[in-house]
Length: 151
Image (spheres, rainbow, N blue to C red):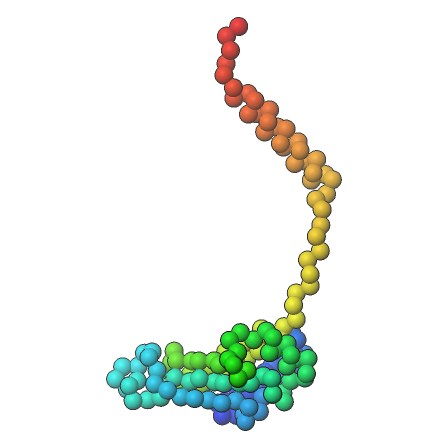
């Protein structure tokens, strides 16, 4: 993973065969006070990180990739930005790294191509025959459960 404040390197994956590098200028980080762990110092340190990225105007992706990102990224705001928040660590640096890792995971998930459509199949003839035989056997067993008649 790259260090906070530098370009974000997205490793290769499905839908992104050669990877990508998002320039640091396209990423916006905002800091605020974290509601998470940390004791007294959490009230005075801005350790919560919000990482903002606008995929529609990014120069790191091709036109097709940008279209796929805009249509498949969850939680785009009205300005077309995706926001990733990290506040689980006490350190601002660790939260910055966590937010970048989450953004990379979101991008990988959104860029992955859809799975191939399911091809419906029919049960085989022998499996159909076995099923009918099992049903007949169950029917015969249940037929024996009736009342016993005195004759």
